Image (cartoon, rainbow, N blue to C red; front, side):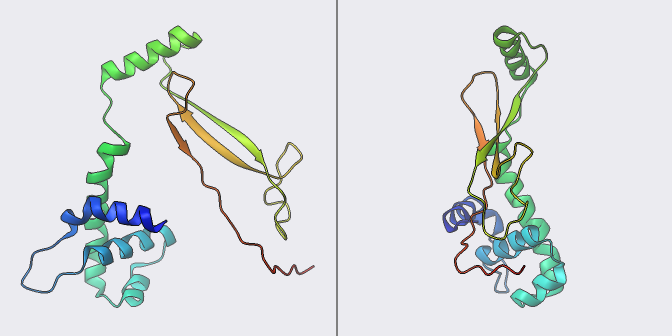
Length: 164
């Protein structure tokens, strides 16, 4: 996660993570770090307990609390509730423009040609006969893309030694 994204997320959920207690509470930044690393790495809670030197029961408690805070803040932004009239409007748009009934969205992918990374073997090789990454996009009725999710891994292949 980029530092700017982490800061943005922390600013959004900081008030929900701030505890008021007679004990010194854990910093919201630390709570978010523990949770995001736990979710990203798929480690056990025990590993986060030792990595951050926080009690096991504390880690067990802060991960669900932080996940709930993230959901409460980000759900209205990224997954707004659609009502029946919204669905109907989108479906009518697909029918009008593309003569495709009962459709609420479209997903498509595009192979983007890349130079083969060193020592990648067939990892990025596609069925079309060249090296590529896949760019996926989703859209509603209009042709302009509403959301574009691209997960492109950037590797520095400097001084890579391949074992043959």
